[in-house]
Structure formats: structure tokens, C-alpha cells
Length: 103
Image 1 (cartoon, rainbow, N blue to C red):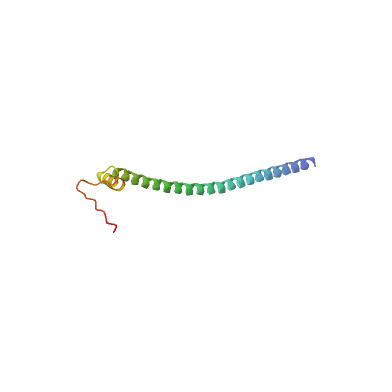
Image 2: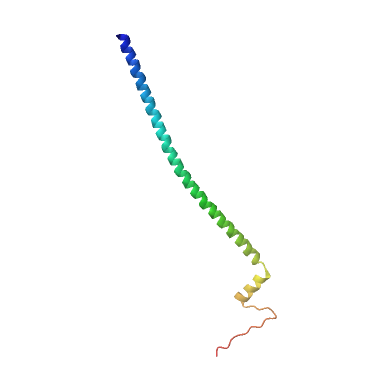
């Protein structure tokens, strides 16, 4: 009888050990699954952020090109003459200023 009691204890201990192991594996699987969901959500956030930043980069590149063109234009004689006429009221030597009568 004692041998049977010892065998039952071993079976019970083995079953408890197996049950404990399965609980731990289940908990680990749950944690991994939950973390996977969180990581996928973060990934989506990062993808959207990356797309927004790429759009910003494209906008800034276009702005840079526009500014480079403007920089070239403001060094031309045409621009200098326009500014002289508009802001300073200067004329070319062969131009005549005509004013309208207020009558």
C-alpha cells in the first residue's frame, strides 16, 4: 500500500508540475501576443509619421528650388531695374516720365 501511495504522490506532483508549466506557457504566450499588438500599433504610427516627414522633405525641396531660382533672378539686371523703378522711381536714360493731369 505504501508503494501505491508514493506512486499517487508522484503522479499528483507530476500533474501539478505539468499544470503549472502550462499556466506559465499560457501567460508567456498572452504577454507575447499583447506585445505584438502594441508593436504593430506603434509600427503604424511610425509609418504615418515617416510618410508625413517624407512629404515635408518634398515640400522643403520644392521650396529650396524656388529659393535658388529667386536667388539667381535677384542678381539679374532685369530685377535690379524693376526694383529701381518701383521703389526708387528711377528711369532709364532713354525713358520719359509722363504724369496725368488731375483736371
